[in-house]
Amino acid sequence: MSHLSRLVAPLVFAVAAIHTVAPASAATDYPTSTLAEYVYGCMKANGENRDMLQRCSCSIDVISSVITYDHYLAAETYKSMGLVPGENGVLFRESAPAKASITELKRAQAEADIRCF
Image (cartoon, rainbow, N blue to C red; front, side):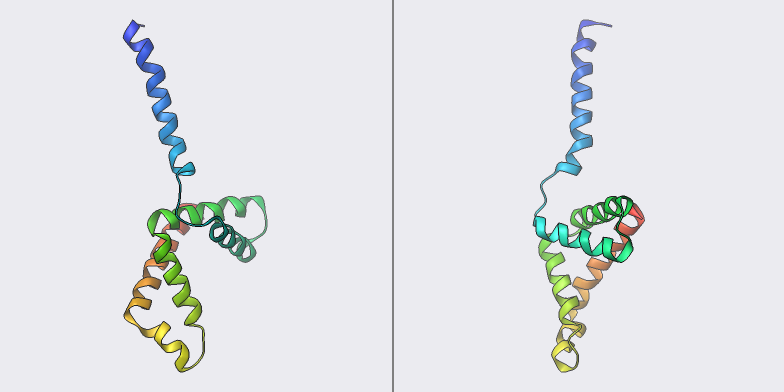
């Protein structure tokens, strides 16, 4: 092994390790409470075991990599307010921004389902 390759090899491994770790440890603009709430709800719906903890954590990680927190928050707000019966909920069910936000969230969730479940 040449002198240069002895110096470069550890550097290549270090860069590869950083690249591998970076997505999991990358800072997200999603608050911890939102991440925890999502994982909790996901586990309640799918099973409360270690496998579901991993899958649900993966799911919110994928969602947070696809859409910003502001878009996620808007979509979740439109979804919950759209559940209000009658005229009060119509604006949240039928407006163009509501439909666009919810569609964006559904696409992110579909991507998460493909990757994690």
